[in-house]
Image (cartoon, rainbow, N blue to C red; front, side):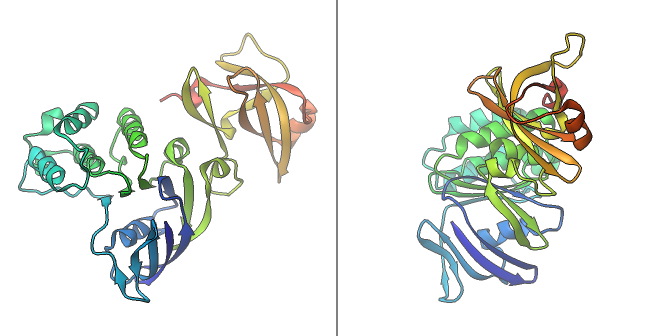
Length: 320
């Protein structure tokens, strides 16, 4: 997808290109323009000027007055929208009947309801649902519309969910991203580090950073925490560099669960902070881990590239 759009009210100026499939994380502080971007792509803002192109077709081209009358799009706003006079079951049936997704079956709906703990809500009206329940139903409605070549726009879809349900919802979304382009807005950067393929950082209505998620996690951008994505016992975890310490030898008397034999690959000094990239030999597939220490610690431990050290982080740094 290629986007080059501007608007006066609300004021923004977006220009970027992303792959036609995968998850694009949209990150930034409140009021920066994240929701405006999603609404513009969905076609909900009349003030937009410019071009939006997806799979060599224009969704929007105001210069040549080209507007897509129909395109596959699944949109979930910050505030879940359900037909208020219909039950949850009727809302699901309506969307399923009018969905472009030929693979969306009654069994698919049942599976999603079961995984998100919503089976008991089918006979309820939206007014009888809590905020988290509405959000789960709206998320299911978004998922059952996803088909190949669908644009999926999710605006803080997990904000009212607890940690356990967030994890379930993220895993579900990950299973749906093949062949579709998903824009995910969230204030939880760890969710983007876990699932996104690209990250766009929006600031004051414009894009101040855009890169692959791997490069974003390794970035020294002031608003993007340095982190690593490593596998422990076959499960991927996001480990923040601030949670990793370095010592020269293992300590059997320590409460720290993970003490990993590592080798220093690079050392980068940024102000009084030292960023160290470690090759962890005790994990499968020679994984890399970032650590942040002070210049005083660097000098005291006399650390240098290719030196063998021990990387430490507590289980609480990644456990829910």
